[in-house]
Structure formats: C-alpha cells, structure tokens
Image (cartoon, rainbow, N blue to C red; front, side, top):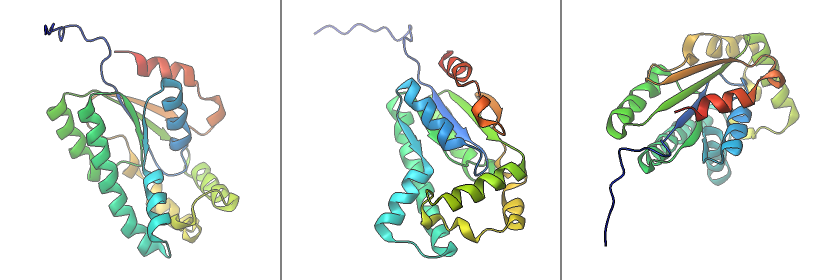
Length: 195
C-alpha cells in the first residue's frame, strides 16, 4: 500500500461556526438555516436541554438551572468531539466570556481549529417582546420555565454585556437581528465559506 502525503494542500479546511448572543436574538433560527444551507452538523444547547427535560422531568426554575448546568457539560463535550473530528459544523448557544471562552481557546491551541463567531443581538425591548411571544406561543418547552421572568429580571439578566462575543480568536460577525427577516443570509454564508 502506498500513502501519498498531501497535507500541504488543504482542500476542505475545518470551520467552526459559533452562533451566540442573548436569549430571543434569533440564534437558533439563524444557526439552523446556516447548517442546513451548508449541509453541516448542527449542535444547539436547547436541543440537549429539552431532551433532558423530557427524560428527567421538569418543575421550577431551580431544577431548570440544575439541568442547564448538565446541559452545558454535555454541549461542551460534544463540541470538543466535533472539533477533534476535523469536520466543519455549526454550534449555537448563549456562550459567555466568563464561562466558555477558556475552553474554546484551549481547543484552538490543541486542535488548530478556526472559529467564525456570529454574534446576534437586538434592542433589549425587542428581545423581551420576542421572549414573551415565544412563551405565549406554546412552542417553547415548558421546562425552560420562561413564564417566570418579569421584564425587570429579563433586563437585569440579559440587558448587559454578559452575552458579548467571546475573545477566542477568529472572525467575529456582529448581527443586529432586530429586523430578522431582512438579514442577508446569502452574504453570511459567503463569509463563512471563505477560507
């Protein structure tokens, strides 16, 4: 058997697209659109969280937060596995500098991966309106206990720089998702495909 080494010519470099930002900014919708258009795997926090709710049950905010902590452990585990695989993928969640940036930096060093971070954000009043609308729609899993957040608590939790882009290297694309339907998804896809 003959093995030809062609590592000097990268035909299909890995791209790790991280879609992040505050709740109700349109992250999951956008990330799903991108992953579908690119035909890449899609890993998202709420998908894992809701599987845990379905399997283990749900009750109040304290339980939701407890399962949320396990969700992040599972999410980060699978994120590293996907990075280690060398394939491109889209991962979505409300990542923060304080809780997640160090892991992404370590993976960049360990696996020599490339990040493209897409940060979704909108005016806090728009975010709260969307938050309320999705609670009222009944489409959001009840395990999230979203109905228990007042506007004041929502603003205190999500109306700050807490969900700013992480400082992890790679490109950062900031999107104002206030008018979500006007987003140029094709231009975004072209930016992602660039080596």
